[in-house]
Image (cartoon, rainbow, N blue to C red; front, side, top):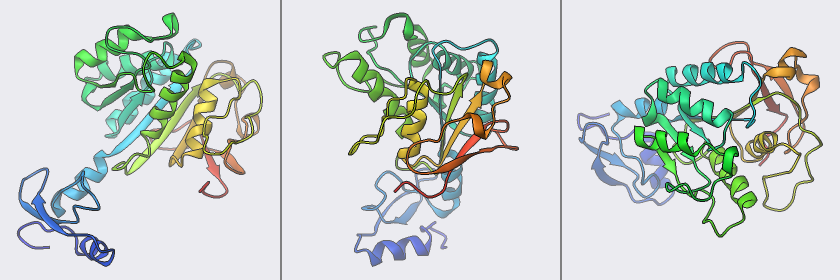
Length: 278
């Protein structure tokens, strides 16, 4: 590592071995010249001193749940959001009432609009939403506070609403595995198992119907390779003492639910697949 803050030698070597052009660009933090494989990582450019900082910051949790939260559900979401933000994670949510609205409110109360991303099924003018099932006012408040809002995140108003709702949820889930994210998690705050089993997989599809949008989104996370897929039981499911045996297997192959005993997701159940789905 030289005084000019060159990128780690192993990274440059790997890039050269793959035939990538190694150029010079400024560190995104201190603007010192930095040797970096630009063709491989065009969105990054950091000196060695700041690589570790960027890796720590690029963790995102996608929080989802029912449009009708049971008693105490909003408080559970508030604690999850506070814990994730306090640990340096960013947050992605949808635009629905219930869990999405509670997460947005918690992030804004924490003064963390700059780490909040909202996936909206409609636009900033109020068109394209699902009536009372959507929380447009909360999305607009988040936008005005400085949050990143992905308006029309699943296509224009000409696309059927149901298709856009599914597409919005998939887009939010996939934000946990996009380029540059070093750690991603999808957390479902749920009060019941899905009404029925997941539909059989189909070519190229990750959204498998099971009668619950929250559970279908958790299934999509498992199929999309999200690093951590977790469930936080609330309401009747929590009262019944939800354990591994009371929750369904997620699609993508066999696995098990394991309790999380420490960290920001303590008290949750994490899906542990027997093998990576791809």
